[in-house]
Amino acid sequence: MIRLHSQITEFTSAEWDVLAGTQPFVSHAYLAALEQTAAVGERSGWAPCHLALRDEAQRLIGAMPLYRKTHSYGEYVFDWAWADAYQRHGLDYYPKLISAIPFTPITGPRLLAKDDATRQILLAAAVAIAQEAGDSSFHLLFPEANQAALAQQSGLIPRCDVQFHWLRGDWRDYADFSDALTRDKRKKLRQERRKVSDAGVEIIRKRGSDISEADWHFFYRCYSNTYLEHRSTPYLSLAFFLQIASSMPQACLLVLAYQAGQPIAAALNIIGPDRLYGRYWGAAWGPAGFVANLHFELCFYQGIEFALEAGLDAFEGGAQGAHKLARGFAPVSTQSAHWLAHAGFADAIDQHLAKERQAVSQWQSELEQHKPFKR
Image 1: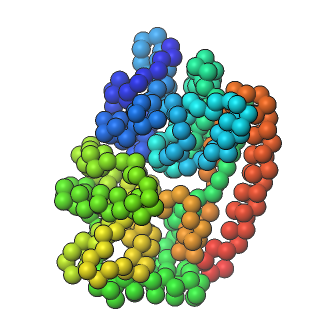
Image 2: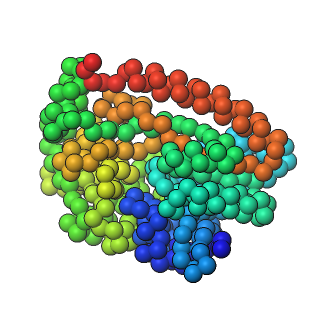
């Protein structure tokens, strides 16, 4: 039986998480924090309508994080041009249906089930729901590769992009990693880190219960400053961060920078079972003002060091940013899949995305040639 739920708390955390697995962003706790602090909801343009598939005994055998959207903010798979084309032809692009983790461009499970047959049922149900509701489209954003392949087999249009992830080699520690870089790149990284230390900056990493409420308040001030600098509004509230600090503390890693004993910047990472996810950063500069390269130190080098110390396989430093390549990150393909109700637009977008995939593949191949490691 298929049913839609307007709140993640209509599922028990146990039944949801047994299907979702161990990736923190798909967890019941993370999605509940988004809803309970109003980061998502009707007023935000992210209306939860999570999909549940239950067997005859009412056991949950399939689920999908699902939202009806009235805009395209916070998705990181950009379809503004599609919406504009619809508008120019007198058609409504919104609302649309998406399966994604709000504000989180991180690959993970979206079709939550134990087998592919059930995942295909979930996909078919999502498309049918979009059709019955009169939605323009259904979008599956940042699914795992096998789920993206299933979506393509089910007739959805594939789309790809590139992110930059640090991938663990056979390095024992940061010094090993640094030594593997070419001479010029190694020199540049050392210079960047030295400028931070020469500015009298002390870096402290805190995890879980070691992060105080005062630390969270300072982090939120920094996080908000980043949005203000770009004349934008934060998606997430202080209440959201305090809730995940309480509900999933061991997943939280806060990197704090101090100068003359005062905090001046912070970066938040989320820890998964095999990888680290860089999420947000910001600064509240002290009397000495701007510190060159502090962003690279907090958001890249500290994350790489932690991943090596913790034995993690990868560190995802956030969406986009080809500048990460020179700092030891590798180009990695990300996927999405799309169904559009309007046959004419579906054909046009299919043709466009075929060309886009070729261009992205070529760009990724070119990036591979510029990795900063010794041959």
